Image 1 (cartoon, rainbow, N blue to C red):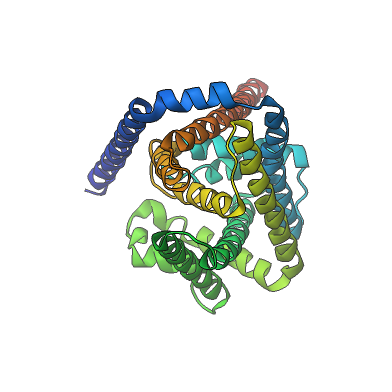
Image 2 (cartoon, helix red, strand yellow):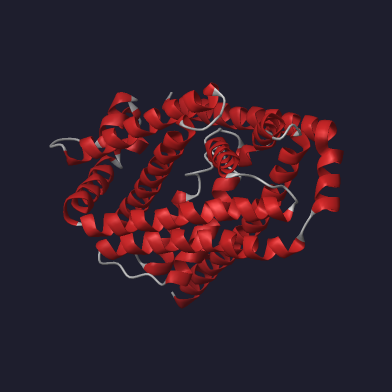
Length: 345
């Protein structure tokens, strides 16, 4: 019976993925037809290639800050991993995340697995480190969101943008504060409570990992209690990430001939980041639709927003291809080790 339920669940998951992808393709196709030609003309006639140089440098540095942050977290657990190794693993994780509905977290299991196989970091420590890394990332996102909302209150922007951002920040605050509270509170941790609530442990496969989940939660508690300095420096790396994101967007817009002020830049970045939480692979269609609509509101031309979305899409595809190249190389190494291991026996 449980096997049948498991198969049905997998079928539903695949069906949901296909449906969400088809919706994204449909939306994307509509905007290609509606504003695509104007967007391409904007890029062709108004591009300023000189600005693509700082854009390329900054967009690459964003991955550097992510590797640096995870390195700080791993250091708190007395684990030493080379920076370039973490950078490569981070890009591989980004690639997997990008093609899954969970754009912000879909590639984390791959990073944990690569840390285990390449750096001999046990799965429990690796899982805890990656979760703390994401916790710091979302904390930084919340801080920047609050700053953006504060600025937008005093700027001339539509009320619905303030309301949407405010609700998103409230939801993020509740999730982070709940995770922090249940991690430090005596008794079951946040994931144990969540799994109990969802009755996940009723399945034998998940009951087997109950002890491992509790162990991960204990490591998270140790990090919160004993490694406040590392938490602070991790947040500092995200502040650098946030500043770089502003410059990344600014130089990209200049590169395709679009001038923006601080207000417009903040709104563009906020909407850009929010789309990452839409459960559609690569945010396909929704990224283009949101930026097209936003630029129609801000600049009176949706084609400008679609041009911006297209260039960011090219950037993401490039790093996705690079990430899958890293992942394929890693997979090839693992296969070689298994083959050689069997020959050795």
